[in-house]
Image (cartoon, rainbow, N blue to C red; front, side, top):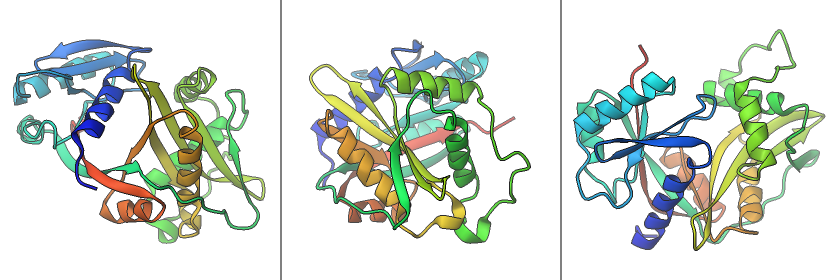
Length: 270
């Protein structure tokens, strides 16, 4: 699917609206910088409708605001809409990457392997921190079965500030979390985050993660399919950013269409 200006504008409006309930927006040149709870940070983004180009000075100013507020120095943009941002971020010393941006087009309903059950997570679920741990371990160990981490000495993670923030978001409907359970243990998780942008509801799928030792069984694709079905009960547009081209091709096989790209940049840790 070629880049569609209308869809890209909807996605930009989504990102402009998403931080408003829990972050104040500061200006850094042509960038908007959401500053809120460090437990649930938002990246800086080009201001919707801005006529000035984003510069390296804007990026440095945004990162300074983020660091002063105790949130990560980070920037996201759609290169097809603001193509100058990547060069500005690199000139400001940020690490830059470009990821595939896909939208749910003709989703395919998938079945989980026998013995795996899927649940929508409630805000008061006592295992919520455990589900977050599945995600944290999965993203920290991308190598699959060859990269399985050693067992945790404490198998029951405790609630953190990030857990409290997630509970609040689930309770208010700003995040929907799904978890796949096998033999009583969480094995895969994923979220979608609906936002009303005025004339439509748009939702982004994020945090798709499968326990490293169980990759290759279709668990992540299954949760993505289920999240799309749930999101489409209210959302007109469902999208996600894939980790790389290979991951994007997996999502294409379950009904996503490649729309454009997403630029992401992070300030080096000091």
